[in-house]
Image (tube, rainbow, N blue to C red; front, top):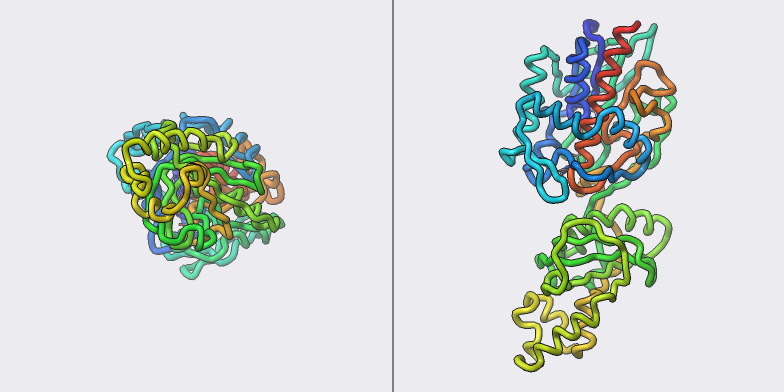
Length: 410
Ligand SMILES: Cc1cc2nc3c(=O)[nH]c(=O)nc-3n(C[C@H](O)[C@H](O)[C@H](O)COP(=O)(O)OP(=O)(O)OC[C@H]3O[C@@H](n4cnc5c(N)ncnc54)[C@H](O)[C@@H]3O)c2cc1C
């Protein structure tokens, strides 16, 4: 039995590593137990290898946004950034408030955490999946294949189920539910949309700036603009992924959502924006596009009307339509959505352990004193743009500091 720490941190991802550092900065002796071979694999994969680690814009959280708001009151983004700057990491802010390491490499974020853990003497055990956590005589006992670890406080930061290959795998929730916590069923979010194959046939590989509107019947529900990518199964790209949470919920309710793709940004008729948008009439730009096509009729033969205006694959798909019909398709190209891609493809999990079972100021369990949780295991998922890592870091810093205080006050 390894009995010499004040806090056990379970999970060596974004939330667990920051929890371990803030607990050790507060004077606690900490051990991190990581089930996989390496710590921080998801950090390395994030932001296409660049790690979009935070966002300075308004908070955009779903699930239990109130818990996220409480966490950010205790640990705002400025505190997360000061924490990293204090570790020597330089950051830059890009469009939309997205924060990246200045060197453009996710490895820099992980290295800054690793070096600080080493400096603080935090012990990190890898290949140490916690199979069982129990509380006996006021101490938590974490059982791993490498042996048992005991401490008066524990932080559970095992992540969710998204991007499964990047973690230890297996549902991490049992560690919390055995203390009486409940579980909102985990589902994939920020993932690609699968579509009726007929709608996207022949377009696979095409990447276009577009305004996407998700509709229930004719009623617009949610919209996002950016680079959409046609694939053989449907539609990908950040803007499509931003709509996947709502699309998934609609499908679960037995609804049949339709995605309308407006190519006006590609045609240069409206500005290119890379963000969410207010959902509006998906056909709003039909007249504008029709006027643009009518102008071209004076200089181009009818069959070449789309040449130089939109990519060949799309032009071929629309061949044979009248100008009016072509304008309508370019303004609101309909894609019936049949599903969303699964956990392996998802960037984040929606669902998880409900926020109201934790004190949002400390992230201490309301059911088991000394037990803390942080990161994606909680029922908080953020938008694209750095929000998920920001929550993992802020909740990790909060839970770690309070786990140290709890152990010190015993
Ligand atoms: C491809 C990809 C790209 C992403 N890009 C971004 C981005 O640019 N910006 C952004 O904000 N978010 C991004 N995200 C989301 C973000 O990475 C996660 O939300 C965040 O890493 C969650 O942190 P976490 O510490 O809660 O969980 P994780 O990072 O998943 O860490 C949990 C750790 O716990 C370990 N573990 C699990 N069970 C056990 C156990 N029983 N015992 C011991 N260890 C265990 C796992 O192996 C893992 O190392 C991305 C996600 C993916 C998949």
